[in-house]
Length: 62
Image (cartoon, rainbow, N blue to C red; front, side, top):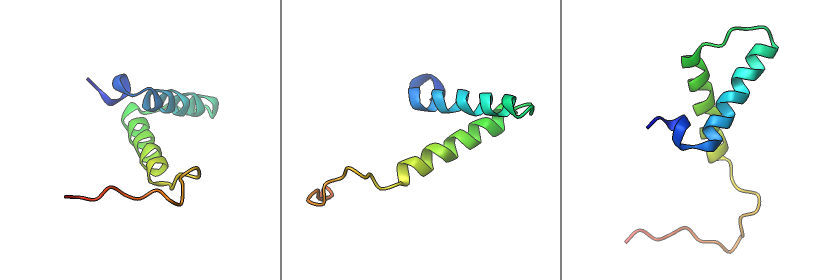
């Protein structure tokens, strides 16, 4: 199964990207759109969470 089918956030980001490209009058290349969406999702995942507790510890690898 593809990433877009199994992840609602990825699918929503992909559709939002395509809509933004159409609003600008540009034709969206599906491969470039997928790359852009993956980059956006990776950047969002790398951001520290604002609601994270300062008392939260990372799990210890055993």
